[in-house]
Length: 269
Length: 269
Image (cartoon, rainbow over all chains, first blue to last red; front, top):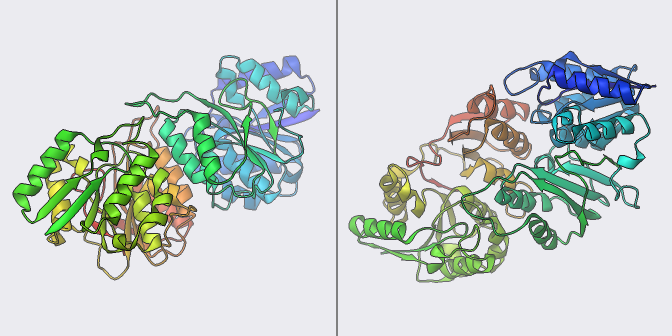
């Protein structure tokens, strides 16, 4: 039995998506129970409920001994508004759990990793069911959560160095905050979505100044780049290589992560 | 006589805009000479010439004793790619000059202020001539550069605390880099343009973690906010107050700066 609690620290999901993933879990993983916190459907401006409501649901899921794992429902934006407060209020029960998500959930994964609470894992979220190929993505997450997920793990994991994976924007925003984990010796994987290439370059200017001492950087997919009024003139890999070179960071090649259905699982550490 | 050199460390301007501002300067400030470096019209992908070309033009303008001031032509994006290298190559001549610009030019203003080179000043750029009311903006800049500009200075300047002014994104990206000046005791003014409110909130999460010890924060205009798929639910001033409160930063009210023709002048320090 794997008992999974789902909450939404960022933006809400739709009941129909929750129903689809619940049915998928029942069909493929009879040993899994999926409890979707009603907060996942709340709406408060941009967010899945107020800061207080999102924090309360996250703490309920993490601090309830009935659950083995906390699965973040969806990204968007908002986890950074509750992450610092949550770290101070996770109790000993949270320390044994897997926390799975990516994108905006990275604020929580980063904070958990810094605080050595539970096992933060980058991987698909419930809302990925809406993507082309979304069933495969959510099944990959459920397989990992149920302990059968080795096939879904990114191939650079377990190669000798500890690893983390983040959305580029999220990791750049974490730098210097109380949620930023120490990444010395780590292979750091990044991916991005829906950002102009000039913004990717700008984020790399910032991030690369904060990654001294890492083992190396891997670049996942940079997808859905909006068209600017003129071409940027430098492709994503060349951007990342440029800033790695300036800071003597080893560029290690591609990572099989991104805002898509192929997004692989990266357990931190 | 005030001799002004114009270069473009970010994106290019059009010859017709240069001609308009040159004519305006000649008509209103006969004591001013305006030398527009040909690099201002260069194009290299997104940028006004390659990194090497933009760096070379910046150094020519800054290190030439014939000029009293360096006026940045336009923002956009790109100054952060040449700023660190330029700091190491400005010579003693640069130390007596005014450097005027804002927006993406903030990477240079921040680095100059940190390195105590010249007088970094936030204020209108040549390309502001294209705005509604752009003549007033460029005349404000020219008046300041010619030494007659007291009327164009932001009203919180000279009230007892040193001041700086930055685009929010630019200052957030400066944090933790080799260009970030120490801001302890400063009144920090910020403004933003063309960013979603969730992005403003995210930038404030990041920036506020880096502003410990400042005297207080003032908020300029947050303009041209794109419409999101749903309303964010928190207005810019409330966003800034939220993050100031979390970090015990004094919120001091409005600043008369922004990406518009009313943008006032803020000499750093």
